[in-house]
Image (cartoon, rainbow, N blue to C red; front, side, top):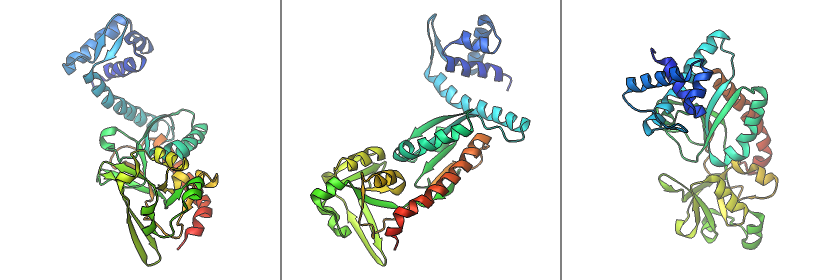
Length: 311
């Protein structure tokens, strides 16, 4: 803690791209700011910046140090703000992660609404369909349709998530649609792939009947990006198995049509995932409460599209 002021100077200089500008913000002369940075680098026994008369550029070690310092300083600021304001200060940056499709077509609108309530909150949004290592990535909150097997994380269920087989009306008009999972192999399909490869086994249930379809990857379009898979389906390239949260707007607008609605794929509920032992800043708590309310209201609206699929 003896060099906390030096660390703040380092983080601010990295943000502004200028040591003298960072020093001015902290009330330091250029000479004093330079001396403070030299002292910090000597303590760490490493160079944090490559410095010229025109440019201040982070070294690889500087980038690594910055990635750890930023959330640490934010946590200290949060703790002080919580004590000063009775745990009610909602401001600062939230590092949020979500799946690519839902992040672009659902979550972005919700974050805009949240910012109308809390204009002092800023977002760092990472979109990925893979389950990232949240402990390493310094994510405050992640929205996922699956739960990572990590005991250091908490998964709070936000909403049910029906997965649906769908295709563009133009594709259905040309090729028809399957009436049973066994028919799917006769149609073009779009596969999502992850770290373990393409998700080529599609399971369905209708009452007591269970059917499994093995989609041949070599005959399919394949991607690791859910938004691209959805776009391909809209463009008429085949059947795709997607979360209802990803495609409900397309179903409403008749860009996509649900196929075999009486056959049900395994549900993958939406979860908010966060660190078990990390202090939850007021802004993160406010966002989590906001998302709980938004998912609850949206789930009621989704029932209109899911009622014909019950059973």
